[in-house]
Every structure is written in structure tokens, then in C-alpha cells.
Amino acid sequence: MWMSDLALAQFLAVLTAFGFASGDTSARFALRTSTPITATLTVSCVTLVMYGPFALTSASLSSLSLSGAAVFLAAGVSAPGLARTFLYMSFNRIGMSRSTAFISISPLVTVFLAIVALGERPTPLVYLGTLLIVGGVLILTVEQKSAGEREGRGKTVWYFFVYAMLAMLTLGIASFLRKVGVALIPSLSVGLCLSAVGTLAVTVFWNFLLPSGDRIRFTRQSALPFLLSGIFTSLAHLAFFSALQRASLSTVAPLVFTVPLFALGFSWLLFREVERLNARLLAGVVLI
Image (cartoon, rainbow, N blue to C red; front, side, top):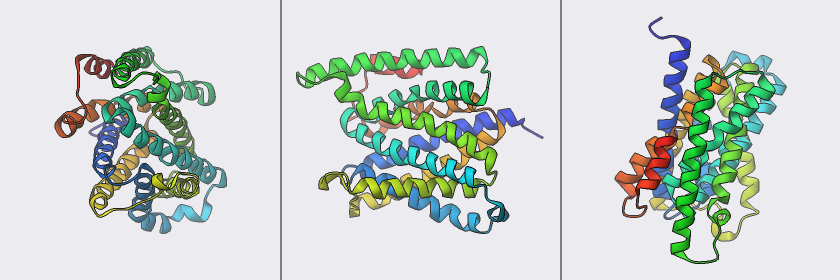
């Protein structure tokens, strides 16, 4: 074999990060005229269209594990169901580059769950990586606090980062659930579709709880960017699931959350007129 399972898993994890960053960037264009929950709905629908035919013809459907199905459904509710909606809401509050950088603390949640629940023993390099991630996030938090002081008084760090923090927690939990799920249901298409169903269910439910201005709303301008976002994100999830089949969660998760490195480049190229990058923000992302 030209590449070991570990090397292939690492490559797929980085490819996942690139796919997520591409999807987030496409969604950023669409959010100018639409809502975050619409982006989440689009991702789940595109996933079902792309992988549904393969899942329906999968031989594993006849012996589908109910516990595995429940795990994948819960993973879909957590992310992209809740996490991606929180993330896109954070885009509107603190920008794409800061949002995606902050949620990179998710590996801390994921690695903790992998150690406690799965019995994994990460290498010293994994622990070093998590420390660098924390340092980068702290720098970004200080940077945004000073930005908040310039924009107006009375706004706390919590105000700026609440959606990013919620996205971070739900993403970390979802990664853990997907690792458990691929061990119970090896068919990637079935797992992807089950997750998409969980995402679709929580999105429709949540839609009725939101103010009218934040509910599902498609516009002509947002249609193509949302479609591209759905395709990029669905392909990224396929790469992520495949990586989880080949390596431990504590190895894959930190690489998946290198999304900020790609998001930073996209942000500078496409949104520099909206999000001004500075040395402190760059230092935080480099540490991550």
C-alpha cells in the first residue's frame, strides 16, 4: 500500500479542514441576504441528496445497529445541527476568521472524551498541540475584547464569544459521537445520512423557536453560495468519517480543527474589506 492507514487518516483530516473552511466561506457570502439556520438546513439536504442513494442500496441496512443509528442521529443534532448554526451566528458577530479560530479549542473537548470514554492514550505531541491551541484562543479572546471596547462600551467578551463557545462545545461532542458511530455502523453513506436526518430534525424544530427575522429564508442571491457550501461541507464530512475509520480520535480531531489556517487565507482574500486582520489575530491563528 502506497500510504499507511495513519498517514491516509491524517491527509483526510487536513482535507476535511479545507472542506469545512471552503463551506464556511461560501456560506459567508450567502449570509449577507439569508440566515444561519438556512445554511444548516441546506447542508443536511445536500448530504441526503448526495449520499442517500448509496445508503438505500447499502447491504448494511438489513442489519442496521439501532444503537449506532441513535449515536449518528445525536451527532447530527450536535453538529452540524446546533454547532454550524451557532458558528454562522458567530460569523455575524465577530467575523469568520475569529469564529473559526475560537472553535478550534474543540479538540480539547474531543481529546478529553476520547481519553475518558474510549480509553485512548494520546502521544505527547497531541498534548503539546492542545496547549498551543489554548494559547492561540486566549490571544484571540484578548484581541476581540479590545475590539469590543472600540466598538462600544457595555459589551463583554461573553457577548462576543457566546455563539463561538457553544459551537466549540457541540463540535467537540459531535466528533466523539461520530467516532463511536463509525465503529457501530461501518457504512459511511448510512452514517452520513443518519447524521443529516438528525441535523434536519433539530433545524426544523429550532426554526419555530427563532424570531421571524432569523428563521429559514432562501433568497435568489444566497442560493448558489448555499449550494456550494452544502457540497463542500458534505464532502468534508465524508473525508472526516473515513479518517475516523483509520485512526484514533485524538489523532484525527486536532488536524480537522486546523480550519482557521484555511479560513484565515479565505478571509484575507475575500473579506479583507470587512474583517481587518492584524498581528495579534495572525499570531493566535499561527499558534492554533
